[in-house]
Amino acid sequence: NGQFVAYSSRAQNIVISDTDPYTEDIFVYDVINDLTVQLTPYPGGQANDDSFDPDLSGNGEEIAFTSYADNWMFNVDYNQQTDVYATIYYENPEEMADGQGGNSYVYLVSHVIDDGYMFSADNASYEPAVSLNGRYVAFTSLATNFIFTDTNNTSDIYVRDLHTGAIERV
Image (tube, rainbow, N blue to C red; front, side, top):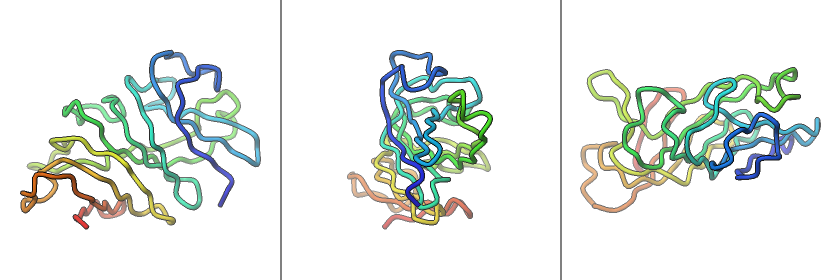
């Protein structure tokens, strides 16, 4: 809708809550209210590695991005590769003033389910694109464990339904 702009930066002077000088972070700028917030894994926390390539849904509430950080979701990301995450972002004006980013729920888009447990994919996932309504996230991946028939030894494009969790190769 044009109200929000998502971008990544290594600059430390965008919000006062950015305390890590070495990582690239995701920021969301609210054009109407002239406020910038930093996406963080948890309130007051910092991603422990680079996050980049953000893409916003049409209403600006869903943000998909690529990250090397493994602390966006605890006990899930063990592949030491880039992963694709989606954040469902809900504006919280009192927190936006200090750059803390309101309320959000982080979801590992590039995951597999094995025996009822969620794990990161077995290789890198990147280049996310979120649908206009925020329900679907398309991404590129070198992983071979999303579907059993992936034997082509090259990157593939997948689409994850954030409502049902279903994934398909396109």
